[in-house]
Length: 159
Image (cartoon, rainbow, N blue to C red; front, side, top):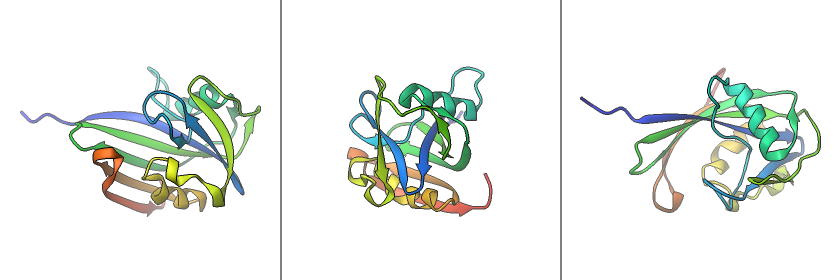
């Protein structure tokens, strides 16, 4: 009997108020030392949207008001049977002031100064679509040192 790859459902939310985006410096755990959006795992019984809002609240100290799903990306790591299915959300409306948490240090960046060199290497492929308001789906395969070995990314009409 064939083993099916494990699949983990995750969220990623980027707050985008043109011409700036809110990113967080990951301070610990998976992705530490990289700028990223805010997100993580679903709690038991939690919807994907509720998980996205909760993660932003926990990591950046703000309450998301508007949330729009922009993409779904599958991430695979060579030699690891687990697939990460990441639901990517856009928000432009929130309550509160971004503040540092134990996990993330939020900071605003102008869209022309996004620090791609200190982000996950896939971000430079899909963030331009995200910033243009496009919907997308994709798959990235990472190799040694998180190099992108192959990828497929396409615009879609709806998710």
